Amino acid sequence: MFISQTGLNLQQAHTLRIDQFHYTSHLDGYQVRTYKKRRGGEVLFEIFTSYREWFERYIKWRSEWFSDESDSLLFPLIRNGGRILEKAPQFTNIRRICREYSIPMVSPKTLRRTRINWLLRMGHNPEQVAELAQHTVQTLMHVYTNPHPQIAMVEITRFHQQNDV
Image 1 (cartoon, one colour):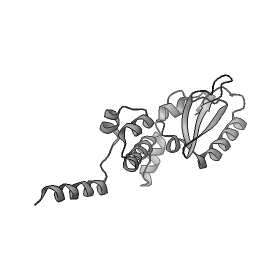
Image 2 (spheres, rainbow, N blue to C red):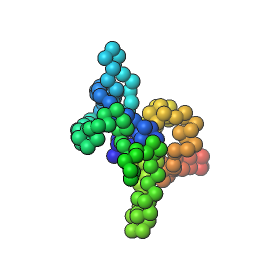
Image 3 (cartoon, rainbow, N blue to C red):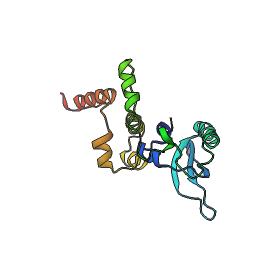
Image 4 (cartoon, rainbow, N blue to C red):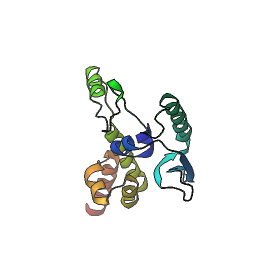
């Protein structure tokens, strides 16, 4: 849910640390910053207005369950023996279980790619989407974009209207 809301990639989300967060209104949501006394703090990610309540509930739950680890990962993954994994999860067991039950697995990468493609279709502004996705336009277009059948049909129709006598 966090990745679909923020658009961060899995490794970025996994390495975020719990902190005192500060919310600044921005467009139809908030920019979330770390609290700094003298400055506003750097923007870590942006969320939609409706997600703020969910995020704050998670922070409260996380603080209750991991109270002795106030300066650690925002999303701690704990394995047997109480050690915290520093590397982002690969969801191997979840993928296996989904395959066994023929349930489609929606990975963080798939969520991010879907969000980026949706933003491209809605905004038609690759420069702005590349900035939001923290990539160059070239990387965005080469790695993330997928053709959309409806847009392809419209473009083909326009091409034939202009070029087919």
